[in-house]
Image (cartoon, rainbow, N blue to C red; front, side, top):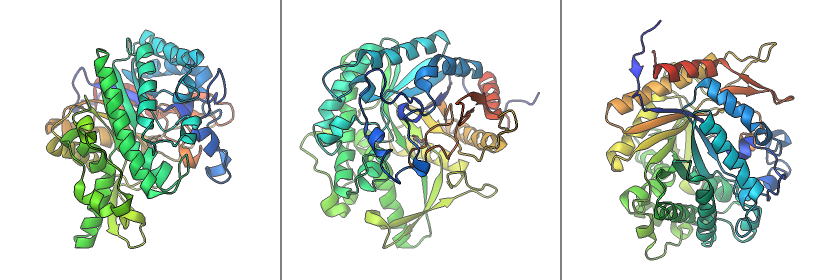
Length: 451
Ligand code: IFM
């Protein structure tokens, strides 16, 4: 047997992750309310091939079997998100007991399988009725989210010790309200920046509610931090890179970890800058027990006069010897290490979880439906090694989660992109673990990887 060179601590968490709308299906069952994605995915031409998450992987009905598969892989932890409209069909007010019960059963099922549940409150499926009341650009969203968070903690925080408020609030704000590629499909920079500010305040409110409930676990926020490289050493490219960094990183990291907003960037936004009320920054400062980092890719950034409000254009960057993933994303494992160390150096050395990392690949099932996904294994291994190096250089990283446990609904790209450790047959929805699932089992058992 090969010697394990990149060994992780005994208590390091090895997990996998998915989100409610992407896997659950059962979009209108057991009293669930509609979400913005239920409506958006039915609009013409928004989603590739007209796909929707109405059935998705049918995880809502197959949950015990899915947990069994997670157990067989040997996961230490499974990170799931709660569907807000499944729990509060109108977003606030009346609770749907059957919806809450689903997550109650999921948590028990995981614990019985020896898998630690990690719960995220929001992964983009806002209750439709709250969008009709203004959505995230409305300041009321802070209280709506607080009400929902309290219901979730009350039911599950006795058994769930690791919580996140938002997964990738940049996506919720800027793809949902800025470009409109995601639900609710609004194309308005002012609303997008206002939504970002309210997502942060809602996060802080949920953190305060959690802490005042004296629950015994930890709560943080999950940000998508891709690595950015200036396209050249021309000043215009360097400045464009800084603007993209400020929108994707500083806008979310600075208030929480440094107690300030990136003022220069906000000024540059002119009329699009969000309304920030007196005292807001105090509410945000220091509000995270840990930082969740989702990392997939690196981009080169160039100044582009026609490049939207940031006046920037992104090109995928791949390290020598690497191509791009099925998403067309550049592969550069060193980018992961740099992102983690950037947090250590510039944001007060917080506790970190690598909450998403994974690779969409052109999977080719054999006649039995099995996928020998060596490209995905190569990707995951290189990123785990890069993470190991970051830890070796001082980062306090407590765990790593593969996106995703199952092939699932990849938002505007429908089911065309495959990220899963487990293949989901598109017709029967049967689950067939890929080679990467067996490989990941070995990683978990060995607590690390060979080069
Ligand atoms: O599928 C998404 C997920 O919802 C959020 N992070 C990135 C994944 C891959 O695109």
